[in-house]
Length: 539
Image (tube, rainbow, N blue to C red; front, side, top):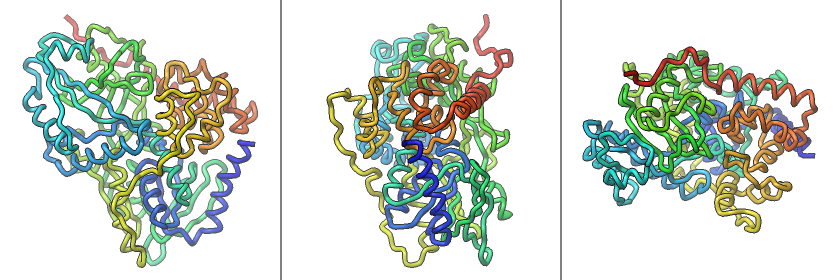
């Protein structure tokens, strides 16, 4: 029954492409957080909007970020006070509106003798940071106090430490929550539907030729405005028009490590000993996440990004530098992942010096929106719609920010603890009560080693446009990042829950499982260990 409903939902959207092919106000290309945000803000202001994504929702950068919803403390040093102020305000809004999905995370930064940035410079930055959030907090702690907060850090030369607050999220689930809200406001969104080429009338973009990536079928849709929200891939559509490339794809790679091996109650922030870049280690979804690198990405943009041997060594060196007593080794790494950031290329030698502001360009009727930060996706969406205004005469919306999500209903409390309630409400909003009702015996328990409940797998398989097993394991849930070997040992139980909901026969499941495990081993496991440079100091 559920499998039939899932197939029917996709078929219904595809049918609407034909029935409404000339009637869309906006067609948005790109199913990451930027495209999802524009979809939501446009739909709630009365526009008829379609979003298409050539792979899976959040397949690109929006499932591979550092998972931080932060104010951009480092941007204060660069003098970007406006960007920091906007980020801080949006962080506060998201923590209030999406509790259980966007949650406060405390950070600890150790102050060592003869290490930058030093107590006073860091404290000045935090004071400015606090004032933007309308807060006033104690930040500096003595060495003894700080060791109570971060007991496993290196004690050599420790003078004390500073603490501050930001927030963290599950980035892929944030995209799904925004898409869900957009669809409740009448929008349409479909994955595995590629924008093959643009259509033009009088040299202005007027529609898109679409290719269904599941069966190869071609269709056309017309639109008053076409928006390119493909992030790091935005130059591809722009160059179809003969426009010059403007982006510099930068890769950020990460490790996940068992929380018991790298126990951090606070997020630990440090400046990397090799290049002075900030690196974080923080608790996320039941593991400790370590990131990030910031390097030029020269690989094929259509292929899955993956961590390099040099990046593994770089992140392991940071762990060794801050936690030498824990003796973390490659055997402790559960998984890796890498994402490609869309950064505007200004030619700076150091990739980390490139700005993180978003950009909007209108070229031959194609509105490109790219760059920016996860935290400010709502402001980016509203800015995009301001650029749409001249292209839609007669549309007179109020483009001031409004509440991002509708208030979800209360959940019955008999079967759930407080954290489970927050999780369901944060991840699923108004659908949380239906997720709870879908749970079968034992499915409100957590998958071992994670915060994910078994029922989340069932719900995703039945209701969330899962077309491949990788969608389920890497984006609807994050089990592929949280479990060794991509969750291989639990696949039989996952199959028992999800195969009937997906409507796959045994041959299809086995094909999907093989493809997923091959993908995981190629792109989410460690590179060949012999290729990883030594990171430990030798006597």
